[in-house]
Image (tube, rainbow, N blue to C red; front, side):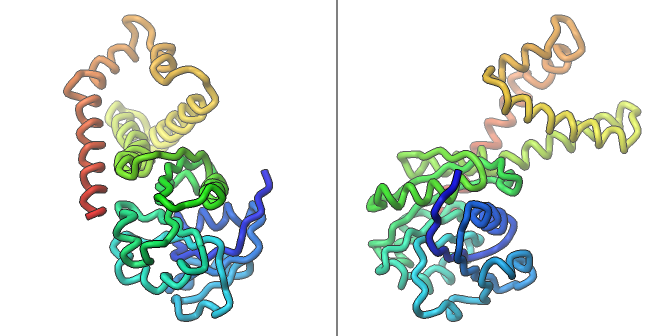
Length: 270
């Protein structure tokens, strides 16, 4: 798919910002200015984008179609006001900051700011991300389409109608890769406990998690159906699942974990 992407201003070029910028450049982004005070973080893009240390170095005649905030939410109060001047020019603001509400960002950018809140996840680095997004009132159809094109550059996109839904999205898909990596970690440890060599345990756990994810992605079957297909009656997997699926085991732990992360996202929103 070929997109025509307008000039873009990226604030922050850490792992997520860098992954998204790479995807945009692959889609044909012609001009990008990246505000990144730590120059080494953006070194890979030095020949494809203009890297500057702060907002004061943005050329006076630069009129971005989109301004993307890929910074830590705690940095927002001190960072956002410097970009309020682009509100009058009709720029679309896209935030991937966890917990920062539309209201808090409009307080810094102006009440007329066209805002999209988005929550991508780290598989964006391999173009396998999942992003949920919310378009605030006042965002035009064309601006929403632009945001969709930007977010699709790193994976699948879904839109929510209620801003608060971004908070459980943050808990499930935003933090989800960490939960999957933890699964690989504990499987590796358990394999070593059962006497397998550490190198083999590591390879086996990683390949099993990665391969199962690929199978799930390729299948039209529900995850529960795929699980049942692996589970032979009275077999070893059934015995293991009896432990994991005990109401006080995985089901309760995952529910509590998602609730805790959702609560924290709401706390950050203030």
